[in-house]
Amino acid sequence: MDTRFGMTIPFDNVPLHAQREWIVELEGLGYTDVWSAEANGADAFTPLALASVWAPSLRLGTAIVPAFTRGPACLAQSVASLADAAPGRVAFGIGTSSNVIVQGWNGIPFEDPYQRTKDMVRFLRAALAGEKVTMETPSFSVRSFTLGVRPEQPVPILIAALREGMLALAGRDGDGAIINWLSAEDVTTVVPIVQAAAGGADREIVARIFVAPTDDADKVRAMGRFAIAAYLNVPVYAAFHEWLGRGEILGEMWRLWKEGDRQAALAAIPDQVVDDLIVWGPAEKCREHIARYVEHGVTTPALALLPFGIDARQAIRDLAPR
Image (cartoon, rainbow, N blue to C red):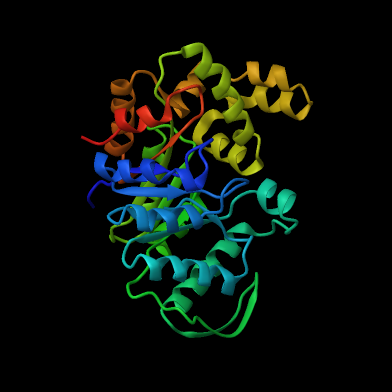
């Protein structure tokens, strides 16, 4: 599978309507993809709809849309609408998200996330193919739904995955996996599970890679600890990193965080964890680090710039594929 090269949009602290020049420049710099996310900022679809018009060669990916926060029919309409606007250019990434986003922010019980994702992928396959869908699943029921907008070309569905169950689901039921918050070396642990479940079929591996092209080590490590703590104290990510073998090195951070001592918890995150999970340094060093992800099995690096005092516009130029 050919290697692609993506950038996460929208960019921080720039209004959506003002990002046209940024997106057009990505296309000119040789980026192949733009990938959106969805948490508490812009929704996943609007930035991609804008990019579809501004930069007509870019592929448009979601990394990710939560499986819980839209009903089946509503989600199918959103995916189909984007795919109808940009035929053959959409890669839809779906995942469980987390209890913080699903339950804490949206008031939806975060129950059996594996089953919910599996059921939603199955439903979307049928609906996007134009079938009249009646489906009774453990996580939802659908009666006599037919999608009114059928994409001209099939939409690849990629599944965000952390541990074995979701990784195998991504290989078996998805067209690939989206991986997140892991080191380049960790890729060698997760990718073989996806590929084994695929039974010999090619599967795309998209990695959201957090990047700060700066040589200010103090700033990266101080701000990086905040970013890492925000994610790795969420139960699904804590379990992921314990599975990856970081239970001992992160155990003190988890203990202090649960006790409510946030400052001590941040201080307990070793420099090595920051250096493993965040790509930082001069641009050429960052490029070499990103290349290690590809060497270990990532087919699509999707860079996510961290707002660590860098010039984001210059960063997209410095990190562009060559």
